Image (cartoon, rainbow, N blue to C red; front, top):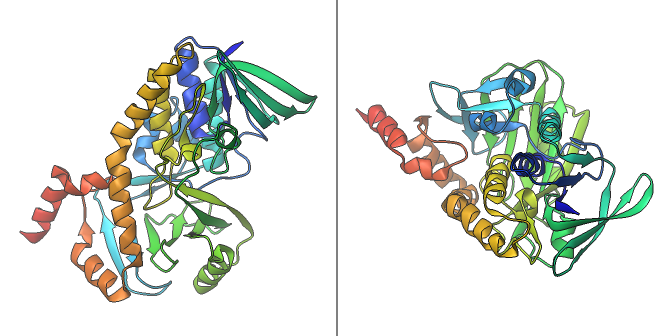
Length: 362
């Protein structure tokens, strides 16, 4: 019997699996397709990403360095409001490569990773969990002391464990063009209903365009209009759901959720790579597969670290729905050099940011 049966080999699943295996646990990972496909989300991340990857990953995955963002109240060609740092603020990376790098690191730690294993059922018992999956060899059942749902916004594990759904799910669309663009600013357009659209230069790998919108809106139609305004044709695109949380509960009797399955995402961007891997570390440090009581320790640990960031993130997101004149006034007042961390809204009140603001006014 395995200590943990992990469902999903995205960043959260692979990070938890690697940490758990390094702690001496027997870990089985079931990935429904091939690791890294289909593409799930943007490759624009903070530089903190390298704290979670194996040595040498930066050289393999880095596509571009970003120093700031230009915010627009309207579409392409509208006035922009730049926010920037003098040093690199974020990185653009090979998103598929990230998944595969983290999965390889997990395997190197001793994790048993099986691709093309699509989970169809989870059954909790007093001392163990049975996880049923469709595999290349037919239907198989795997037994573990605990099941870990790292299987994304539409998590099958969450459903099987009767855990609550995220408060909200946005529709996201990503598309790519191939022209070389080494620009060091991303563009953010506050034109999508209750959210935004973006343009991210990826160096020699081209440009990423994206948009998210709430249910009831046609995200694909809005995306087509957005890219048409930029005068580009998208040859390769993908779509998916973006969960917005936090969920009220992410633990059951012998199972728990991490990452997008747990809606451990930033409400103001929808990104969840860093929050998911941070939560994976908390799970690896607190959960004992022989003691279901330790699941409460995981709930407390990840919420203690992320709860304020998520709460403040909801306040940031509310600004996306303000009338355009108010958005323009606010952006004009705040634009310029900043000391804010892209994953931490609380950094708006940090010493670094306040010092930067004082410098601008002196």
